[in-house]
Image (cartoon, rainbow, N blue to C red; front, side, top):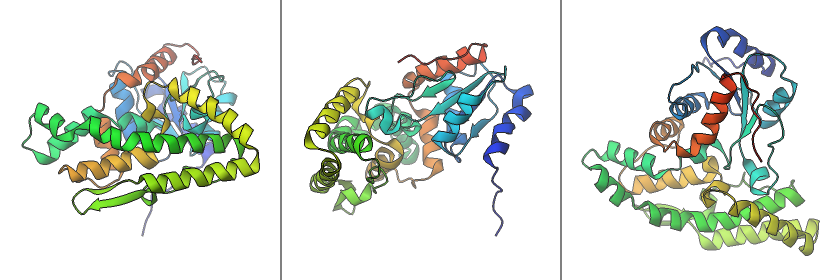
Length: 295
């Protein structure tokens, strides 16, 4: 079976040179396979005010930051990384020129959106008016059932990342933390399983350091989370929230596979207001300025 050839990192760095005659800015991101929904998001964010023809993935956060630090060309370039646990722990990477860090866990958090979810529900059901779809969706109840239990877990993840980064955290499966409600409703976060995992991570981090250190870092993490525009921004959209959303939409009658197509559909409809800082960064860079993200 044939597969699409993959480019080396050095080759990916050179891709921008080929597209310079066709676009206003080079945009580098972390994940391979994210180009399509990134393109949809960013074009909507800037309202097609500039030309963007190619999103360039460098296959890793460190590679994006490394290239950002070494970039010396005159052509406008912006390097975009996820917030990840560095943001949740209160240690964001805002200091490098041309580097933009999402003020949420990852780019997929933009897709965790009431407006987009309502549109997908309408599209799949085909019989609901906009107001009816919003009512059926009942976003407030859904967020209340999902975000608070996962938020406490991600507090522990962030503290552990600071004190003992070798402890597995976000890589642990979302669905292993769920319980089956019914065949129709599917899975929802299980308080007991989440509590057990949270306690396990806390104990491991405390064993590696001390209770005093753990509590000190926990306060810093809580302060960082409280500064976010929405508490859901502290939870991985890719590995947790969008999986919960897919299950919930299925329960409401809109069954989508959890794949790139699902993300792309959400990117078509999500609210662009949270993208305003990123849009400003892109436009500022395209106009010839060297972007510096505010702390």
